Length: 233
Image 1 (tube, rainbow, N blue to C red):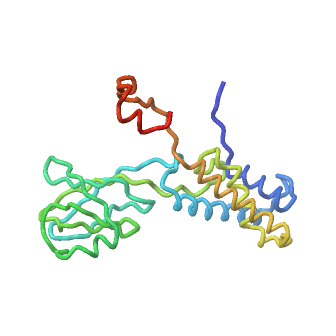
Image 2: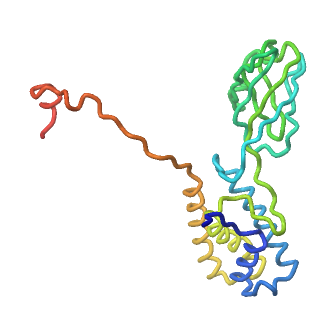
Image 3: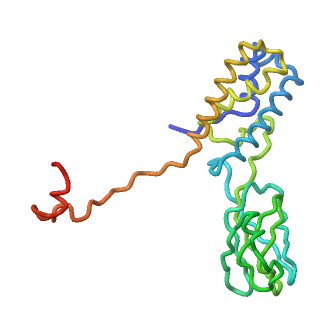
């Protein structure tokens, strides 16, 4: 018995083409398949960027150098969706570095102060600004979630398999104008696409097992205690 199943980019394209173009798998022209593939990649990147948890994309560790008296440093990675953890190593210890936003960095009065970095602003791409500015050469270690991979022929797309069906509803709506789908049908597909986005967000939520909740001191209450008289039993 197996529980592993996926659909490749080609299979998803064929399903979408069947709904939009009313064509069989063997009748899809290369130009049409390219249009659908591009729509898949654009939606894939957008949906991933909107979320903070994406089961299919693994976290990536990377190490990069910080130079003395230089606040900025590049992690050298071009596929950072968002950084998760940063540490600074100056010797043998990995000291945690807080990731901050633009407003927090702007509020720092002495941005040229020298010392071991305690905070870092991610500028986007692979660039980081550290504060205090490193007083000596050191090493930063970054753990980040990578951007979803581009799709490729014959390979599964980089999403959880449970999201594939609503993803097809999104792609169908995205290419409707390209193929002159009647406005009445587009309106129906828009409603289906909005529902698909909500469904993907629901499927995107991390779920864990419920834990046992202990009720402390439940059996030790005194019959005439304040707690008993506070309620209408």
